[in-house]
Image (cartoon, rainbow over all chains, first blue to last red; front, side, top):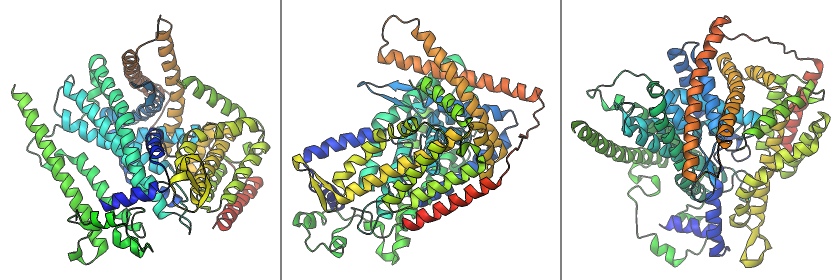
Length: 376
Length: 260
């Protein structure tokens, strides 16, 4: 509680409330356009780390291309990348008078599988960056991670979870495509917000002037996630679902493109949910990145840290409020482990397990309903 | 719909890239490596003046390469204020720091806020300018071939080239599809109707992409494609390229050192 309050307070210092609301709405609108990160928003160090994170996915994609594909697939990937590029230029009218565009990553993943969608969307992004100046060249690693890795893998996992073993004409596929597209882009926006948000705390001048993207995590993540969840992700969902519905009418074979051996229900949970596990693993891998940050997240100081920062006076309300809620893993640390870093990673793993359990419960719900549908 | 604009833009770029000029004369591989070095210098420099200097360097290079300056400046700065400028604007007020100017309504521009906004704007503007220089001075085919210098697998470069070519085909197809619909309309379409049209167009486009890809494959096979692309490698580093390369390395080092 107190952390949020301090973060908010330090942000709003000296700015009237009406302006803050205006900027809030403004930022919401702005961040919907900021998915293609230009050069200059991220430090070169972040850019290089993002390249390293995407690299295995590219290797996986190329390997898949070689294994699955004969030379026949060279033109296929090229055409799909071109398709993804063109889809990004379709402005879809949304209620309220504005337009937004889809990335097409979810659609590519549904048709080609996530590994190859990574390649197709990456290629489209490379051409956009080099030729059309849309998105930076050093920032390609980050852009490819958000739009060519996170988006296709998350969308595909959800689409598969909802529509596995369903006939191509099933309504469930449309629902899966819509939910997959929505969640995929929203999670991608979360990562983009994360990449923006770590900049001011990691890279600033001696007097605290941010050198790259200026907004801390407490601003960038909500701005990116809410803006996308409300505007851009519904567009991705709409385009994906409408095209899947269209393909059901016009070319069903396109939906059976990813021909995989049928996975029998006896298989272990790992195999069944492999894609989802991979996404989770990536998120766990990302957790230690937080350790690179010196000190506490900007604007997320606790009351003790505030006084150590040189603030002699802690507002009374804050001191009172900070005692109201004490988290089981306060400061992402477990005192018993006697090591802050270990505690941080531990907290990450606990968080992941908790989220995993929630996800598992959700899947159970979907599977139960699925068997219910079958018995009808 | 900016599909027409994209087509025009790429034709214009190819035309400038084939004119004689300073950058046009250099080896494409060198230009790609130089672009990366320049982007690093812009990113690593902690001084606004140094970044500004690099921007003027880009302007000078554009002048020597016979790129119309008005077009060059407009292409970069018309878009940036729209996106980055608006993103940077709130930072003027909400970055904590000593006050620089008081505006009406109790708004305070902080010194740190102004600096950080300028950093963002200048970095993005200069980076985009450098990237635009590469594209305007190098035909796309050479850019692609030169990407091999970054150790990209040949298959990927082949796919990139084909993608670029088919983007044009698909853009033309899409344009025709929209035009044919528009020419049969008597009134403006409602939102839901437009969404339906876009879904149908996207679906048709996907079907066409799949069809064309199998046709392209047959065409490639019938011309003797044997799973491995071969290109004519005509790159040759001349003295002037080495000299230019040395200059770029020096500039990068100087920019990073000056902007520590």
